[in-house]
Image 1 (cartoon, rainbow, N blue to C red):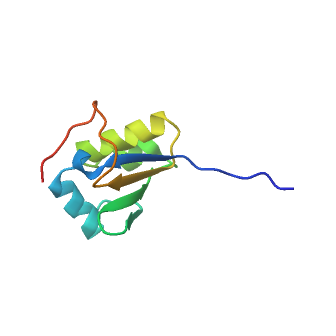
Image 2 (cartoon, rainbow, N blue to C red):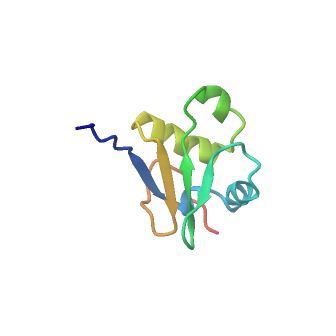
Image 3 (cartoon, rainbow, N blue to C red):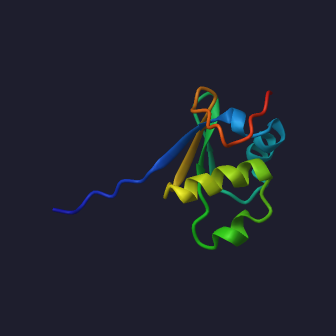
Length: 94
């Protein structure tokens, strides 16, 4: 029997990204893999190959989220309007 491969997902609130960053994700100009999540939010693939190079030009708010995800061995980040509010990340009111 083959072993299951289970991937970790970091769930956070969309309040941890600015409205501007949300717009950049929506416009697909950041060079990241992003899928719209249901009504409100995103499923984002954490850059894997050359992490430092791939995240260098990202907005600071998104880079901080990816850094947290990488620190906890998460491959995906799920941003949801009702997601978890993490004290160490900035919060944006939009």
